[in-house]
Amino acid sequence: MKNLFRIELIKTIYYPTFWAILLLHSLFFVIIIALGANLDINIQGVQVFKLFAPNYIWGTTAWIASWFNLLLAIMIIVLTGNEIQYNTFRRQLLDGLNRNHLIIGKFALIAGLSLYVIFLVSVTGFIISLNSGEPSINGFFYGFKFVLILGVQSLAYMSLAMLTAIVFRNIALSIIVFLLYFIMIEPFIRIFFASNIDVYFPVKLISNLTPMPDFMGMISSELSAMQAVDPNSIAQLQSVPDGLSLGISVPLCLIYIVVFVSVTRILLKVRDF
Amino acid sequence: MASVLKVNSLSKNFGSIKALDNLNLSISKGEVFGILGPNGSGKTTFLSVILGIKTATAGNFCWFEEPNDKVVNNKLGALLEVPYFYPYLSIEKNLRITALSRGYGLESIPEILHKVGLFERRKSPCYSLSLGMKQRLALAQTLLGNPEILVLDEPTNGLDPEGIADVRNIIKDQSYLGKTIIIASHNLDEIQKVCTHVVILKNGKNIAYGKVDDLLSINQVAIIESQQTNELSNLLTSIKGCKILEKNASGFVLTFDSQVNVAEFGTLLSNEGITLNRFEIRRPTLEELFLGIVKQTNS
Image (spheres, chains in turn orange, green):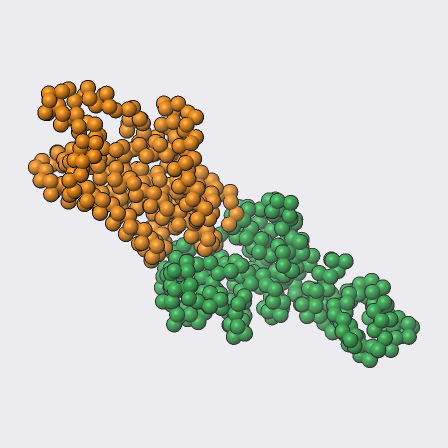
C-alpha cells in the first residue's frame, strides 16, 4: 500500500500540468476571497464583505471553493486519461500490480486533493477571520462543518471525473462529456422530474452540499434589527425549498462516491488493456 | 523439466475475429521459446492473455502450476509491443515506478541502467529519448528485479545493429543463468540465434511447434538453377511436398518436406529432360522454414 502512494506521488509531483492546475486553483480561490473580504460591494442588499464575518465565513469560503472543484475534477481526468493514453496502466499491470491497485492509487490521489482543498479553505478562512477580530474560539469554528463537507464534495466530483476518464478513455472527450453532464445533460433530464425527486440526481445533490450563503437570512437579521420585524417571517417568505438536509445529502453523496468508484473498478476489471 | 507455463485450448476473439484459436502449448524452465508468425497472427494477443492484460474468451493457462489464469507477475519481466512509460519523467524515475510496482528496492536501478547502456542518460526525460533508447529503457524495466521469466515482444524494435547485438547478448546471458525466456519477433535470424523452441502462429492457430533443431530437420532446402525455368516451374508445382520459396532469373529456392525423396526428385528431373546448372541441398534456416510452412498453410 505504501508503495502505491509512493508511485502515485512520483507520477504526480513531477507532472508540470498538475502544478499548473493546482496553482490556478489556489490563486483563483485566494484572489476571489481576498477581493470579496475587502471590497465594499452591495449585492441584494448585503455588503459582500459581511459574508466573511464570523458565523458566515466557513459557509462562504466553502461555497466559493466549490466553484473551483471542476478544475480539480478536470485534473483527475487528465491524470487518469494520461495513464490510458501512455499505456502506463498496462505497464503497471505487467509490473505486478493488479486492477484494484490501480484504483486504490488513483483514489488515494483524489483523497489527497480533497485534503488539500480542506487545508486551503481552512488556512484562507483562518487568515480572514484573524483580520475580522473574532474574539471567541466557539465563534471561530461556527459553520466549520461546511469545510469538511466541501472535502466530501471534492471527493465526489473527482470520483465522477475518474469514472468519466475510464469510460471515455480520451482526455478531451472526457472533459467535454463531464462538463456537458454538469451544465446541460443532468439539468435537462431533471426537467422531467418533480422537484422532490430531482434533488437526488448526483450533480444537484453534490452541488447542494455547499449552498450559497444565506443572503435572505442576513437581510432579515439586519431589517429586524432596524425595524423590529421577525427575521424568520422574512426568510420564510423569500426562501425556496431546494435540496435535502445535510443529514441526508452527505450520506447520499458518500453512497454516490462508492458507486462511482465501484463502477470504475468493474470497468477496469472487465476491460482489456 | 518443470513446466513454467501450460496453455490449454486458449482462444481469444475480438468480435467475429479469432485472434487466438484453440492454442495448446507448454513451456519448460530454462527454454528460450520463440513465437513466430506473420502480422496479425496473434503473437501479441497471446502474450497479452498470458500476462493478464487481456482476458481469454475460452481455455486457460497456468504459470508454475498455479490456479488457472493467475498471473505471477512478480516472477515475470515483460516487454509488450512498445515501451510504456511517463514521458515527462526521467528514465530513473520511470524505473523507480517499476521497482515500486514490483515491490523491489531501488538499489538495483543503477546496475540495470549500466547493463542497458542508459546510465549516462538516467536524468533525461523520456520524451527526449530516441526509439532505440526507449527500447533499451523498456528492456531495463523488464530486467529490473531479476525476474525468473522474461517475456519479450519484439525486443529489438528500433534498435541499431549494435543495440540488436546487445539485446541478443542480454538474452543469451539470461539464458545461461537458467532463466526462461519467451520471445516474439519478426526477426527470424535473431530467433534462430537465441531460441531453443518455437511455435509458429497463423490466424491464431498453432501451425508448427517444437524444438528448433527438430523443426529444421524435418524440411530441406534445395537451390536449383537451370536454363529451362518454365518447364522446371511447371514440374515443381506438380510435386507434392515441394514449395517454391523464391524464384529468380536463374532458378528457384525450394523447400522439401519429409515425404519428398530427394534421390527420386533428381531422377524425375532427368526423365523430364531438364538439365540443371546447380543443385544444392541444405538444412533450412528458420526463415525458410517459416516461409515454407506459412505458404503451405496458405495453399
